[in-house]
Length: 349
Picture (cartoon, rainbow, N blue to C red):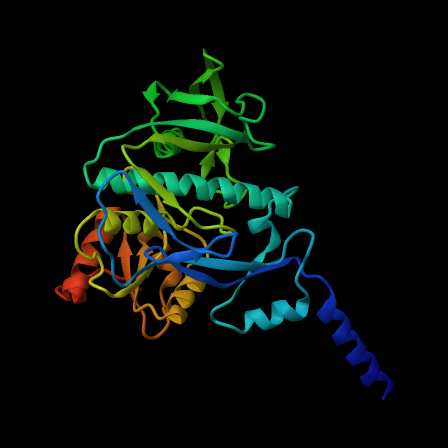
């Protein structure tokens, strides 16, 4: 009896001990063609366009999110972790995969907000680029990331003019040059600071988030001058994974007809001003979120396909995309119900 009591006490004790993990679960789903509730409790369109002609939309083009349980100052219990391991729609990840050493919840939230702001600007730029609508752009440093090569070199407010001799017009341009140079090398960065031109040599290292992405350690914001106003209203959501769906929502709003033919389509993926669709985190959880919201179609970044194979929920058809044009072509097939069987999807082949 004593051993049984000790065993029960030990099990209960372990269940409440903090675990060095975070848990990802399907998060809220937001229709970019719909409305959201503002801080004042009033409903407002997620995408508002003024200064150019707009058109009625139909159906849904939904962006997906992931909810994360756990942070450096609030670890989940082992009981919560064990329960999450048993669910196909949950993921258990090491704490450091989302919170590198020294990162706080506040640090992460601030970075996610900057990423969201950037993704919205990139989405507008991508939408206008796809429609042949010209605009002007430049990128401005928001902050340098502690511990990375750029920390003591760049300053908030620096305007990035060129990298390795190539003019920089948007965040995508800079990322491409850093990727080409590669980890262990450096780039020559020319910035405008308080009206003066400053040349900096900045090293390239692997991101602590995934260990493979080449970075210099700056958070930049795209400053664009668009010919009309586009406002995206979405509070308390961070990150860059909604970019592609924002771009599609904007295109649907400024062009005649319905991109999705009234269907319920969900999707996820980063977007660059030139229309490239990038990978995101939590793809399996987002797939379940899409299915739970009633979506029947899911647009997936091609680079996320390997992680999604074998995990697509019943009732959901995934479509693999690499560019905004791929997404538009998929929506055309979905809206006309012509050629949908030929749309690429994530497979083990």
